[in-house]
Length: 378
Image 1 (tube, rainbow, N blue to C red):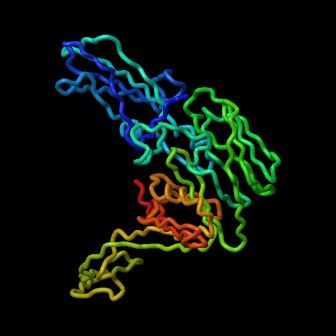
Image 2: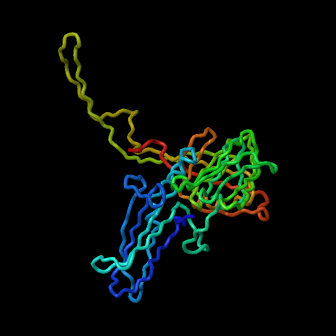
């Protein structure tokens, strides 16, 4: 199994110890690429390589390189409504070659090569440095609510999962098998089933060692309000759906610039006889203006659309997902007409609700469409 770099948190590479008296600096060559591990191709769209040099401090025989920010710039997040299309660029191989060098660049000993798989997730503070533990299903919880009639999709760690079975009342309704072929474009996969005619209450996950785990599902049906779906990048680096079932309010916030201008005009009128082709007298009128002209002129008028969404009553086991939504850097809104918009969450505070404190849990969240109302893309 690959060691995972979650690129929104630091990941440190420590070089091997080197006590040679001629040691001057350490070199690290970082290569990011697609395809299979070690199979770099320059024409690969994800390919890039970087070289770093770092001198050790006095009395030190190794150095540390931090590579997460560099790698994160080469992971591409897209969403067009098809999750498996998004998975093509959600993972990337990272090959790191470290070596000790003399002042003239001569290699000391041998180079060390290590390969990693990078995904745009993050670790929490209490998980410490270089936390790489992986889940089978790339969700932070073991409970999940979905909207009836939509496609239920769960992000899967394809390196570790052999099969996913969707169940209802203890019976297996649908099973999806997975095989890892080593390519980075399928390390994350999405197990999807339709919920239009079938309800599900459990997911059985079998890993490659035939160990089993489960996720509890709950179907939510909404007959009155239009349902909105937020698809966001979760802490493990996979896309996840959250449904908002209740009241929604759309607003448009406008902005513009104004300036005062003179609307006085000298009117010059040339009178002519179209039939004879002769010009007549010219009349000039000063100090006049049109009473329908704009003395205060509006300039650069535009606006931003926002939408307020309500989850409806949810189980407190969903809290972990809403927390991750608050700190996600990639999210999309699918409205009740299946139109997809890139959005940003505008709330900066999240109060975790519990059944003990709040009895019934509903979250209200504000989202801003990530583009202007008037198209100004040039």
